[in-house]
View 1: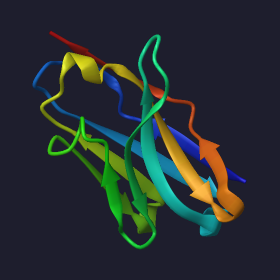
View 2 (view 1 turned 90 degrees about the vertical axis):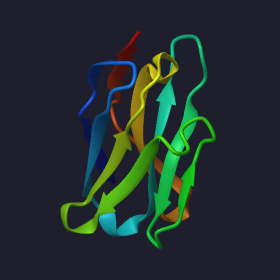
View 3 (view 1 turned 45 degrees about the vertical axis):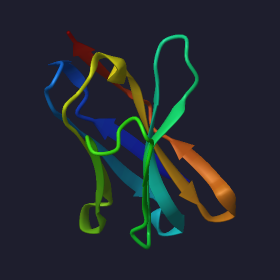
View 4 (view 1 turned 120 degrees about the horizontal axis):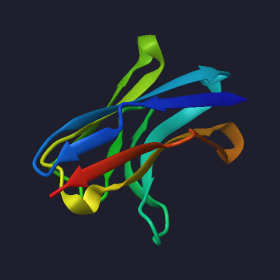
Length: 116
């Protein structure tokens, strides 16, 4: 099992920045990639960014150039640096980990609210 705990959400004005953190624990040696997803009210959960163990990174078009995903292996933590935030970035952000045999693990989610 893998446990994920997110932190760093909050309220920020449009144009501002936030950094989300996701700390992994448990059988972390089985993790092959981690990432961030988000879900806005009335919408489906969507991919924001992912990073693999090999360092390959993928971003949604809507956040490219504004968000940066990074990892700290020593701390078993993945970060999402969000800048130039827009009102439409408002959502619950979820940390995700993919492990061996395509097992998916999710954090509890952290709210990000961007005000105009």
